[in-house]
Image 1 (cartoon, rainbow, N blue to C red):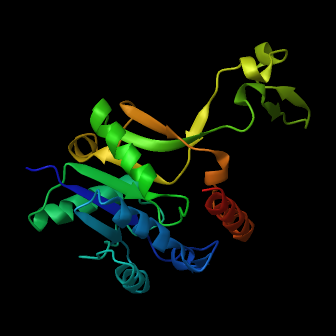
Image 2: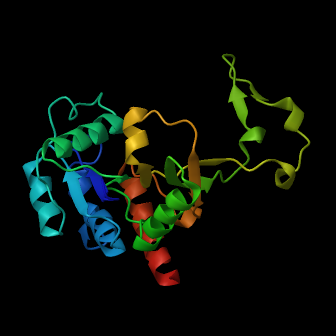
Length: 233
């Protein structure tokens, strides 16, 4: 099998907190368009497709250059299906069509901070390090070691007392998932059923380029951050 690559944009319909979230206008175009355009501009992928259960999303995806060769099944369209379930289904569907892939990139549809350059960098790291997965991460803005917990009597205490007097700059830096994209060795992903706990390499991004979008306030913040990113580029 030659080294073929696929980008899978996971865009289920029926968002409850933000109606039509995956195709809502973000700084002038459907938010999903940014993921599609970055994947296409990277020239990394033999196939850029959208996995969706929505005909409306499918039509918009195709208008921006992605393919929708099949619709997502009912089993992977409910609230309990995980991203790994969706990706495994896509790989299986393509196998039935006689196509297999060496590399796979899962891209979220609400990640306008993705750029083709980040995707290219991630793919280079995956190949160079022979990693199973590469993903963008961002440092926690405040050291988690200095966190508080609130007890049942509503009094507060340090979770980790040994760090009370530690300077922030002396504490180990922790990172969290930026929630944007993941590039995989597709064969290993299938072998592990998407349960990957090691062999992961990071791309470190700044807080300016990361924003969870769970409500309309998050949406507005994301648009402001996006404009700042564009202005600073």
